[in-house]
Image (cartoon, rainbow, N blue to C red):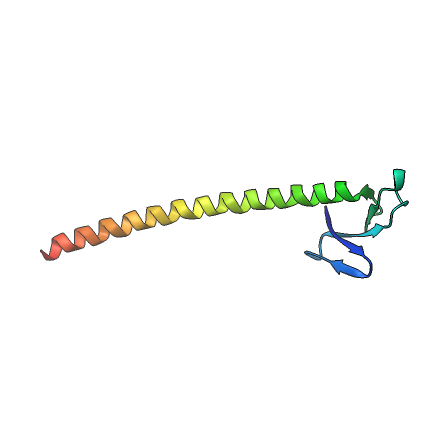
Length: 94
């Protein structure tokens, strides 16, 4: 997966286990399109690089969303159990 690009001396990286890339200026790719070269040597256009980053981010967000839904369900279950325990305890002391 592509994770970073370097342009004009600045860099942006994510996790160390992801591949890093370098953006080469206009004229480097077909039709003067800038390209990104990953650590693995793969050459892709900047738009493909961004699309891959976007896809990876969407997958990560989907995963986080699923985990959040599961945690919300667990919280609702716990709240219901606490409500039942509290209700039965109040009836015991009444």
